[in-house]
Image (tube, rainbow, N blue to C red):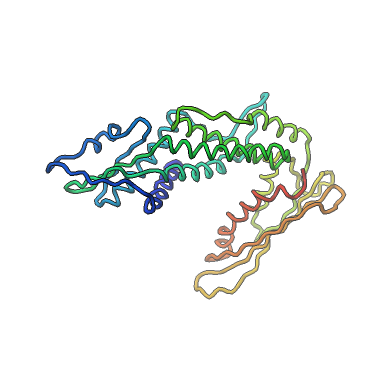
Length: 333
């Protein structure tokens, strides 16, 4: 189901972007009752460096969209079947299994990058039949591979920077970049027939993370949340575990660091019946073992909803992104 949603989202995006693209649309004139060969065998209408698909609909625009959607399906299916993509995020180094919540983050980035690649799709043929229209969508694999190679180069730059930084949060980001790069590289291999060697090995990243984990650094978390909900608290703990800390709760005075925080709400005026507006304030501070403040983070967002719970749910994506980006700045490495 998840892969189907992915393919559909890709297809919708590229169909929207097609309105502004320079598609080469050609009307094909044939004898009455005849249909062009590419409708039945689109591969014969493609060059060796192209990927093609056909779409059918009641109108020409619908056929255009259907062809792009079908090409998106073919692209992902071929990549998955021929290269056996592993979308999980577990790896082994010296019999130690290192797992993380990188799958969702990586897949989101992969969706974005695949969308960019498929924006290069063109409609090369259109045929008007008796009852429906047909369109031939074409992707130039050479050009698509160049776009992916450029993205891989950018990921490599970020990955090296995170590795050189060496902090726990940076090492975790480097790991996510590695998995993103690997997925992009699989797509590049499908399109071009070759892989691009990585400047950083997975073993190097995982060994650095293992050394951090072996330090056994403990962090105490104390967080109060809106209405007793504990989602943000769980997010913070999850991030700390990903970054190879040991998390303790309660009155543990032996922890090396502490994170204290709260999520508060403030209802604001809204003159729309059936909806309420809330401003959410997230505050975090970190302390060392002596109780001295060593870092702080503040964030706020305004969201609407049918009630507090609904507004809270709408605020969570921004809060989650803030924690992803900034939690490493609490100076608790």
